[in-house]
Length: 615
Image 1 (cartoon, rainbow, N blue to C red):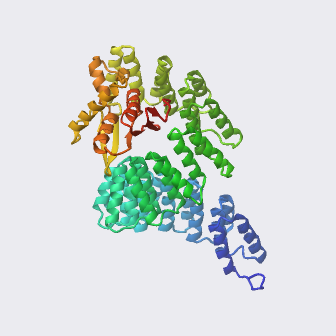
Image 2: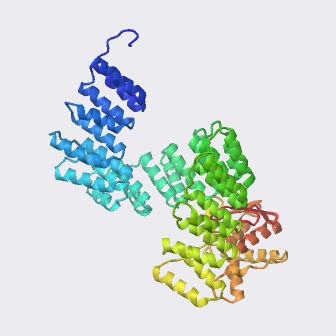
Image 3: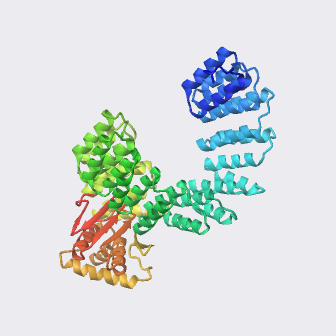
């Protein structure tokens, strides 16, 4: 336009500045500012308003305020843009002072301004400012339309103040899909998935966003089966998922660990055009890895024409959790060769691999490389991996020294890692110290109380055991129960220790005793050292044999007689006896047995485990 000598007027400038705002193009925005100053348009209120918006969008809030303060005329739009700039920068105190200034300037704030502020408060989870703004609306008799109602609801739900959100929701004359979805998301985020489902079931009309919110709520609330049920129900209503929905579905399937269902989700992804989306492929790698199928994870990774740091990190972490340390380190090196810069999460995966492979010196080198070569400041997660690395290698004094010298205060996870290492290596004095440090930070930590009880039980100090357990009972602290799951014919079956509720209980226990007899022929003897209650030896043997993963295995054996692999998911760390049981069973029964416990996978083949008995 300039090259063709067309005249530039003041109406040409605001669209240019708006383009600079949307592109966060600060240098171009400054050039346009200089250009309009030369033309004398910089005192035009429309141009000035656009300049305020440009500087605010580019993060130069002080420059935006400087232009704002020099303006001779400000309408409600200008005030709104300036307030929005402060909101985007998280400067809520400035927002309040500007509201008061606006009021004294005889410019009446409209609902749009309050919608802007409340939305920002919800995103920032700033309930204090949100409450003040709500009070300002009430005190100044601001008309509350449906948009402002929704903004108030969003703010309280976003801040986790669901009592206030529920009060507003009840008062709504019309509960539309937007307000109901807001409540579903809010309740899900605070962990009240039952309340979220209640609102969901009461809705007559549901759109994709609403269905997605419910699926995401279940996926993030440790109820992956329910998430998948909702997904299948949504399809029956003819509603097609989008990328966001599918990410939640794949995540739920990963958490569930059910390989057959994972394969069905993968098929759905490919058939419905999601197979080329980078986030979906990254999620599929994680899903296959968590379902025990490393080959599936590698296949997805290898077919990707585009990979980012998340792709490589997910693959490295997959190898790490499966105990394939060599491939974890190999892919880490390939990642760097491909000029993909590892991030802090990548290093957590690599350090985790070193820890579970017993590679102390390699782990130390990786940690030093992260700091010196990549300039990444170590987080608690990295120190946790390093402490776990020392602990698993029985270098407990090194682990303690690191805990005491690390630059940030150790949290429950750090002390818990040291406590677990002491348990594994029978270092009860230091373990007791670590457990008490855990309880200093979290007096209701069930694992620390159980650990202390176990120490006293091993030493036959039954009186002390009683004291700990009495304290736990009085405070309502309960040990997390062992639970194992197995997928058979697309259905998940759950077993607790000594479970007698399954419809095929008699067959399961008959198969268990049959397997036990076969294993005894090759030297199996129940290891009762993990039974830390005051029972006679025969009773201890029965308790060990009734562990949930053994019951799940035997159900798999009577249900999958022609299968070459049985996958089991355990919510806790697999005990010594069950670990030995699975190894021997894999050899005697000529079967691969895969167990996903709390921290890693165990692939048992021909009497050996992929963890090399190092877990």
